[in-house]
Image (cartoon, rainbow, N blue to C red; front, side, top):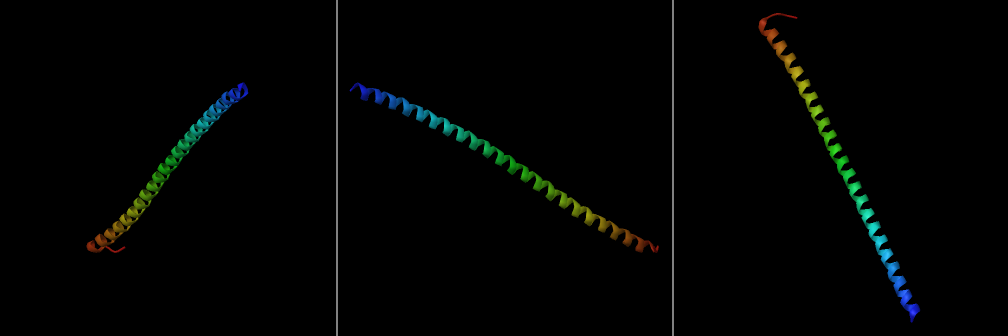
Length: 86
């Protein structure tokens, strides 16, 4: 009977150690998941910012392009109104 009591105590200690090991593994996995999630959120924010900057740059380029040709058109029109030839 004393052998079975020792085995029960030993099993209890082993199961406690396994529980603690499982808890540590779960916490480690949770921390790793939070780190990965933070990295993905940072990448997502960076991608959004870069795409926004590219969009604004393209829009500014096209607006300047249109403004240039409108300016050339007005210059030709004013030249025709004044009667001066190139």
